[in-house]
Length: 202
Image (tube, rainbow, N blue to C red):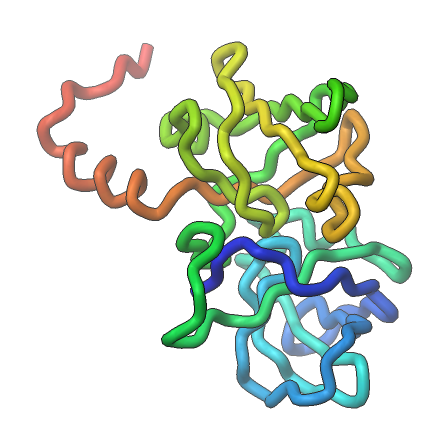
């Protein structure tokens, strides 16, 4: 479990296809990592396989590669990093599982006064779970849904701190981002599903 508060920005140093999946070597500021611990890498929960001073490796299996933008990452790609939440830690963002619900595409990025507004095209399955002023994780960063300007479009506002301390300040139109909807919303949707009329499949 994570909070969506990015602790560091790392860089992909190496990427290779191995028997364990797409293995990535990532630079980081930490020295106390342990094999088997979970780290959210751009919002994707991955397991530390090996580590050293200021680096660690993870492997993304086929299912993860099919559902995320991980296959497009190569040496030089910058990624948001967050270690797993510990009991007793402050929950400064919102509950984030590191389970990507869909990949969105940045539609536009506009500077407006002290913030950066990003409009993102989202898959229908994610869009159904978004509410104005609710929570959403974008590339592992806990954000507030600023607006839903059109069907299938999410708007988030990035404050200056977020721009400087995460990769989101580098967003450009056409960029792919990982999306994770609010956990509570997903459970509510699942509980109400049996009582909803069937969707028109025509």
